[in-house]
Image 1 (cartoon, rainbow, N blue to C red):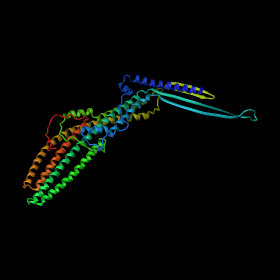
Image 2: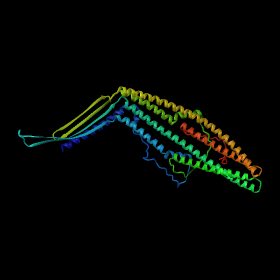
Image 3: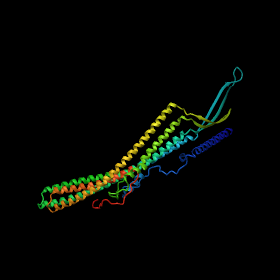
Length: 484
């Protein structure tokens, strides 16, 4: 019973010491950070958005038909694309490192239990021998100790600030990943619209060549046209069918790619509700550059990384300073022949294995890393400036290209109507008809391609700026349903 009481007393003393140490550490952090809002924000608990343990699975199956708008595709990608989930969990990794850095102020607890058994034998009694006697000693020596750092002249704060900057950089990385994902969705979405338009062009071409083949056979039967017109029409029809098969394959591959980006690669039973259009954007080149330098996530992440390198340099320089800490221990030995109880508490100023040369080289490395991070930030800044300017200029060029392509399309359409009418009237030949058909076909594809380039460049400009572009309520070009 005596042994159990002393063990219970040891446990109570240990618990009190731990609670006192934790309260002391929290009080110290509060006093240290009461005038530092940045540090206080680390010690305060914040509501964290609930994240699921596993990536949410999309509810779509190929038994269900869907019609997606561009916004639907973007929402699906952000919700179901696993790369975004990985980026979000990467934020949690770096967020935990902030707490790990501040954990230096938390007490370090050590505990142990030493159980021993010792004994000896000797012969007692007269010099001529006697009965054999044995003495056995058994004991238990539980030990508990704790060390808590009180102040390290800013080393821990600099490390925590560095971890916080890196955490903020990962949050910007997530935004940049979403930014790139949105661009990939838009680019693939517009490519599908172009592929659909291409399929429609070749379907119309096949129908036209089927009609022309019937006309050629009719003229040939009545002796108005040579058989060469029939052969030419059959060749044109076969080539048009081949182009149609290739166009459908391109459309199928594009849809698979879009499904993959949306995070549901097996789902292809859907249609897109939009068409390629010409939209004007309410932004100037100067505003585009200024906005990009202010909000582009990649640029902000590079700046945060440079700030983290600066904090790392500060932490390296402070390795020359000692640590002020409090320590304590308690031992309570219990045995059948002894009873040991001792404890101590103290305050110490210590260096942790200070190697002056190594610390100097670590400072040199941190200084070089800081300069490198600043140079990388400037490089990203220059790259963003160049890409925004280039995409803005390309957007203006692509807009003009659409207007020119529309004019060429109207001319090619009128020419095709004339040669078709001449052939039906029996005054045109197959070569003239084929040239008119090829010109019209190329003009339609060039027009759709110009629309594709314009929309893709607009998406690229949005990616470089980091924000969606605001639309103008203006119409530059009258595009009818017949054109599309």
